[in-house]
Image (cartoon, rainbow, N blue to C red; front, side):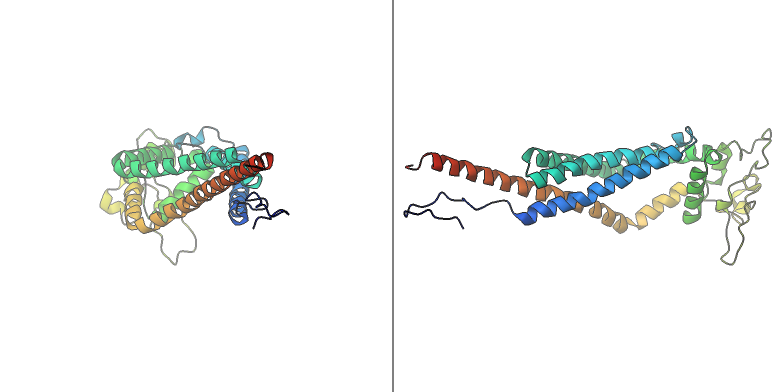
Length: 285
């Protein structure tokens, strides 16, 4: 409550009162501090991954080098959360508005990407198919990419993009007669049917599988492509994907809400200070 001066005249309202809530201020600060630290970790991991990557042309099969993507996202998050941290701590309207606007733009871009991906699902499928084919083409060029493809084929019990014969696009697995590779007409071991009691993985189990027809090959390997498997998995896990999207959206909406509440409180406090200064300058008003 505001103090009253001696002499019985009422004190200008708000001499020791503040509209700025410490709860909102420090909640927004610690909220941004957590993501600020996460952003620095992302940048560090991305830089380390980029420095350790020796094959420069390998990630041409992907839309964006994951290390570069991690660095860019980390720097963007660092800038946004830095504005939120300093803006809330210093009660700076400009930084808080920058934080709020940037977070709103990111949220709207994510929302637009989700809607466009749903509306233009056929084009999105085509882009995924193109990426998978490029990954198959560079399968033997990089160990990280090779492990990623093998993991995906084992997890989704699939082989290739559309079918197991897609592996003929790779120069080592190409099934043409003039291919001198020992892996001619083969598929990676991750395409093979694995029994639960198998202790040692037979990495040569995919030898000559492309030379077999669909029914014969299905006795030894997964013949269905990974794109169809991935689409089926997405359709059967819509609630999980919705939960992930909601988990990403809630912190952003909370940050936007807290920043706007704090901005309004700071503006009210500025109005109060100006009012007090005016009445101190004009005591007969």
